[in-house]
Length: 276
Image (cartoon, rainbow, N blue to C red; front, side, top):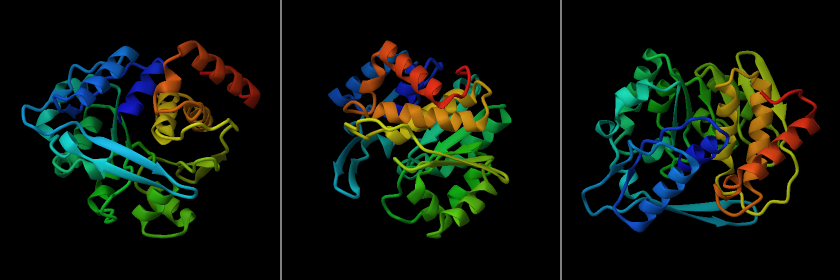
């Protein structure tokens, strides 16, 4: 979610970030990077206990990558840590890592219900379930999600099928829009009976960490500007492709001029008209 927030802000959407960190160097570093991008971190909570900020280590292999996570303060963040008056002032609510929010998870449904009652649009990226249970409480939450952003594997796990078409049919019956990320393959956007499939531009990949969260940021960035869903999908592909050209999930987005140049060049190559 920090990668999502940083890169969405770099795309010039105003972003507020709610999280919980420890009093350690990693938490401070993450907060400083978000602040430098322009993200409002005033609602980040710092634990008064000994728990450290969460840390994820990604081990890439030829066909799969293995993710090791020390959840730290992420397991401790709860509904009481969220300033709901602050949330209600926003246009949109996005949540990442559904299954890692151990203390918050029992109230996530309530969080999304309140966001919708306040007139916000909503989005969700579950990320992986380390316990491989893919609980049924998620399906209730999806009824209040405007844009659901799983990857191919997550979509099939949640729908309990190996057939992506069947997974899309189920998920599209719950969320308003379902967007399935497929790495270098064609991403799919489905709403009702309408569906689009678009491939990302070819780039020299350096590091794909955070590409999925950056894809989310690109899609939401245009969605909030009222763009057509097909254009949101195309832009998300371009933004995600750019993110893999440098090491780390946010590094490519620190040079705003290079980012803008890449986005406009790729958009023009697609012949989609003026960038919304």
